[in-house]
Length: 196
Image (cartoon, rainbow, N blue to C red):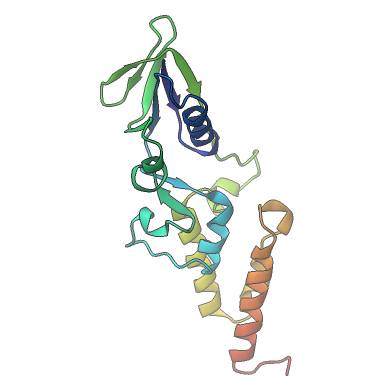
């Protein structure tokens, strides 16, 4: 059985791993197609944004093996020989011919197809959100937020209080705790500390 999974986020990887376990010992091919080279564990992105999980733009994504991002081929799929990862984007699905056309021109035939392409960032029509807000979906977004936080700290020791993220909007409430801890640390270091 040829199984093609389009998308290697939480859904696609979970399906691939579970199918590999369930079909062990049976003849099958599982192929994941995704344009990314790494899987981003989004619940940890706030740690990159706040500096709790060190990461720089010069590092490769696979440098965060125990962090927010892991390499597909080396770190995830190496344990599952039945799963093949294809680095490409699917441009067309032909359900009659039971095939997908990849951006690089490769046509992959399937017996079963799983579409798990994830979601897009939505601003829900909030005025200015797409221009002024930074989403938190990728490592690059986390680094942009970290840069803004660093700039705010450099400009004023007290500036961060205006930019604390509401804990109901993120998957882990400790973002505000981490920011508050930073604030208290900086408050102690600020010249003219008004709270002593």
